[in-house]
Length: 525
Ligand SMILES: Cc1cc2nc3c(=O)[nH]c(=O)nc-3n(C[C@H](O)[C@H](O)[C@H](O)COP(=O)(O)OP(=O)(O)OC[C@H]3O[C@@H](n4cnc5c(N)ncnc54)[C@H](O)[C@@H]3O)c2cc1C
Ligand code: SF4
Image (tube, rainbow, N blue to C red; front, side, top):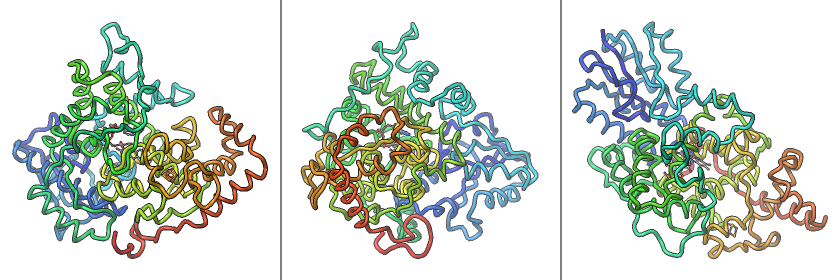
């Protein structure tokens, strides 16, 4: 009896549940590069290189460890182009009588897996993904017991569950659960000491780069700077470099932005975590150990661990709780087309231009660029949230639907009407000015609301509140901005509305074909 164990592109972990307890003598591991996954949205070139190269490296490591690996390449002429098609072929090839797989990270793929047993007539065992600390049934039980799904209460449960930064008497280290208020410093005067560790493409990665430059040349993004970890060993080296160099000030400058400083004090670990080269527990233990050794202050270690076991796992739970409805969520009924500058970077708004440039060059932007610059702009401008979600899924190397959808449609666009956040993350130019140096070099004046040189975020912000008065005024966390709006005279209000309208009409909609294969994508992508 042969057991077929498919391993998906975001399951590249040697400790994967489906491998534990399997016997290499009667197991065939199936790894598949399929066209459906590389093109259902037109992913950034760097994202495709990362996943294919990491898969090929992982397959080699498995073979070295004694496993039989059946690896189907993208350019295999027999390749059926979908997971289901390839699993069907592999079952015949190996005369396998059962399938074992770890649950998929995306709704779309999990639906396909559910159909396999009926379709192929073999038992399919779907195991929970225990690389996440909180099993999904536990998350659902937590959610069912709450009126409001506030991340902080989930996070405290996760701290108790893991024992991370906990004292033997059950209290949090430092006497406090959360040091977020110490984590909002404006950008530092000095720059980080050195760029994050880079990993030069080896022969395997170079071969994949050539494939992507040929087959996916019209996709968004550049590959000139590709230097992401593609093996667990490289990811561990990036983690060690982060803990030593950036983590000590990660907490303090978590929300800061500096023009041209692409990574600041951030870890850049999300790409490795999301495809399985690192686990959440492993990176948290490294951060805690550094704190206990005295090299990392508590606000930094706690801030980082909160992102990992709090936000990351809460986001994943919310995805499975809210799907499939989340994909179509559109609380504000926004319909405007995504502006062209999200793809070209051509805009006079210095904050947006730099964030898109970082995205194009590195398939990366840090959290505040994603949330308070590009996400904030899209929500204020009333962009169709489905188009915004497509953009985020395409452009970031760490983007998989389970993490992208709740962050974009929930946290950033408030398209879920507040299931995930207690208020929209809306901000005027003043926020960006406080947390960055962008406004100093911008052609717009961040202090102005109206006029040719007025910062667009300002009129858009007030117009957004006014436009959505019926839906938002009752939110207790928004009473202050509405009180300010109410104090504006009628003439001021009319000027703001006109300024916003004029600006929105000046936006060039993106040409079709950037995100999904509808016609030929624009040249130069
Ligand atoms: C609109 C929007 C879209 C996003 N899309 C994605 C996405 O597609 N994939 C993704 O991994 N993250 C996404 N995030 C969350 C976050 O911005 C990225 O995880 C982070 O920027 C990755 O960079 P880093 O590894 O340097 O993170 P750091 O700033 O160093 O943070 C450490 C780690 O914490 C975790 N983390 C922090 N915040 C979140 C969060 N809100 N959700 C999930 N994990 C979190 C990540 O694993 C990250 O690697 C999104 C956030 C927003 C606001
Ligand atoms: S002035 Fe406005 S548009 Fe320009 S960088 Fe500042 S916030 Fe962005």
